[in-house]
Amino acid sequence: MAANGESQTVSEYIVHHLTNLTYGKLPAGFERYDGSVVPEGGQWTMAHGAAESAAMGFNAIHVDSMIWSIALGLIFCWLFRRVAVQATSGVPSGLINFVEMVVEFVDGTVKDTFHGKNPLIAPLALTIFVWVFLMNLMDLIPVDLIPHSLMLAGVEYQKIVPSTDPNITMGMAIGVFVLMLFYSIKVKGFGFVKELTLNPFNHPVFIPVNLFMEVVGLLAKPFSLGLRLFGNMYAGEMIFILIAALFSVGVFWMLPAALLQIGWAIFHILVITLQAFIFMVLTIVYLSMAHEDH
Image 1 (cartoon, rainbow, N blue to C red):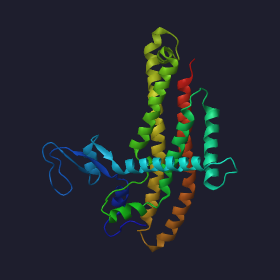
Image 2 (cartoon, helix red, strand yellow; image 1 turned 90 degrees about the horizontal axis):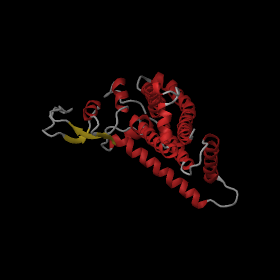
Image 3 (cartoon, helix red, strand yellow; image 1 turned 90 degrees about the vertical axis):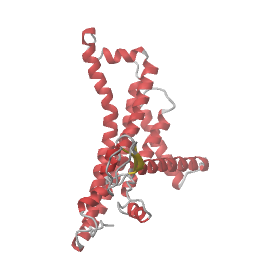
Image 4 (cartoon, rainbow, N blue to C red; image 1 turned 180 degrees about the horizontal axis):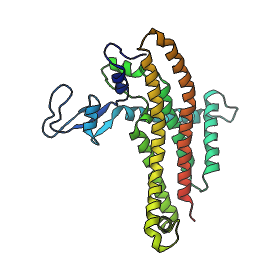
């Protein structure tokens, strides 16, 4: 479905699709889109446009990203639980066979990558892989289908791909980072402090240099983990939006736009699967490093 050519320019169309449904607190004195001024003490409300979302700052939540990510997580839990209940000792078929393939694939990856002993790692890896894959999979839904349908119901903004929101990807990365710190302290104890202060230069004189280098390297892990997923999925979503905007240019562009849409969707299947796999593998690697006590 193309842009609303009569009411939106291509630029406005792109900005609209990249704007989250945001609920938060506007600061006092802020002039809203309709000309009204926020009263003393601020105002909790739904944002109308990017300017209001930016004015809310940290006092805001992306409602669409939260709803879609939680809903997809619940779908994952329901689907795998249903398969677990229906599983038998016989030859699996259909959905059961597919789920077993995914579980065996993740289990094999964990055995090859994780060198410690922790019963949490395999379920965590499975959850991350399937959850991220489902969030990425939303990118294959036509960009106008759900947002336009919800707009008819009065919902002005709607981003349906949670992994194109840095708040979601960085939130997951920070969760992995917390687990890294927890197991580093639990497994290594004081050895974790020695690892930060006496590596790579094993001399007290170089403790400040070692500490700086190790802390920077440690903090780089969650940033690279979250921003890599966000960057790749955001770029993919942007290309889908640009292709969809071609439909509003004219009849001549409809066939090329349709072919581009199909071609990019086929290629993007590889991207969404690869990004889910990379996020899972890096999580396993980081947690494996946290369990290595030298």
